[in-house]
Length: 371
Length: 104
Image (cartoon, rainbow over all chains, first blue to last red; front, side, top):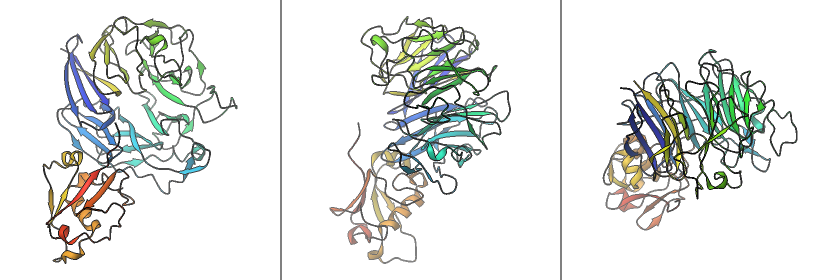
């Protein structure tokens, strides 16, 4: 019988939640790497036993862990992320030049075709690739080396490359997003990149044609239709129908269009999920009610999904890597909160249950659908 | 032989339960000439997983929240060439690698 494995990264370790295809009964394993911040854990779509994890602390720096048995055991692999050449500078918060300095790995994106190839998005923003299962890492410096790189500025959380998407149809096409530089696209497997931010409007950037400077929080696509992108920006939910060349707003009737994650239903390319947050000042759900919003029309028309979610006194946040879907026939939707809850809906969002309620603050949720 | 005491997270990472005993490589080094850098080099040689966790791999700079102590002395700001106290070099006292108290 099919099943799911939910990989959860938290402020104090990693957890693995497993269930069969009914997604009713769960077993919880962990914490792995107790006491360490686990920004991201993600499995290879080619080899489901292969999982990569980003482990770090302010004390002892960055490690990468790899599992070859579905998360039962782990081994530390390569952790040297050396910028290519002389790194140069980007802009600091006050507009002065600031040297590029590696801080941590935010996001790991295993290859769609090779379990030994994995991409890493890091702070200060850069893209790295390993082709030997994480043992060594090389920068794809065409991104950071773009003409605009010296003008990129960090967001409040640091200047992080947090989103990496491989186009499953158009060979060599990749997308990346950086806070607060914006979205970028490569059409040559990551060698060269260009900004794709036309149509984004950001408060504080007076130039409506600004090529960079946009605080993109997350991008998502459906693999059957990779030219259609959905974006949760700092403010605004956006859509592109031409692989990022142009964006238009689809926030519609959302109670707030500030938020972090955005996900697309596994079987319905026009069904999209967001989790509105009151504002960048408050960073908790509107009215203390935790609600996922679903659009079945590719944006603009949104319905609140609240069955099983707390509808009073809820003041958690849901971070950009903390929502995912499985690919079972009845698509499951999952998200984790800064309050330590991981919620599942086994019916596309109509109803929700907490798998766990008291984990450390959740940083990331990734789902593997098992045969 | 010198002794090194690691903080808990690094003991877990290196899969050791107590102090680490290290032979300083080289032709019969004069105990008085064992430096802080030699001790860290030997530690990282024995446990490669610790590279980068105590000092930056590229620059060799001590990580900000890691401190070095020995024989009631704070050695955190000493250079790699700093000679360790005789009692540490002789294995009578450990070199303490300590994670600073911080965080939540």
